[in-house]
Length: 132
Image (cartoon, one colour):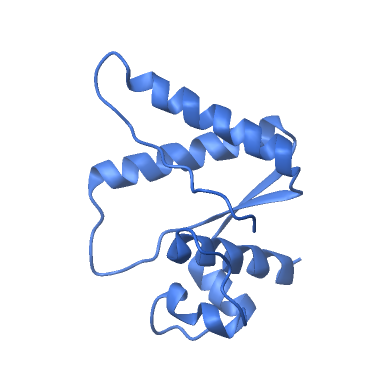
């Protein structure tokens, strides 16, 4: 995990809506080129009582599709990881959010930016490595 500011995708309405998508895609290409990962892991949403807003899901799914598309273009393997699979691979309890169990996977904090998201990314990467 690298200490970088998280990328934020904001979908807009109107004539400039496509610019945010193009900018996010370009950022994905840049990151994949600079980091040269051997795989991209997309962690599924946490199931819960709260139903996400359609706008939030639209943004998430658009970002995931763009990232997966860029990974394929860069010839980087891209996998989706269910949280149940993550829990099974890492031996995490089924109770509580995955983010609540990060300390049992990593002894030290993963990073200072966007901790709940970065922690989940690190745990997903670890689960994918364990699953190889």
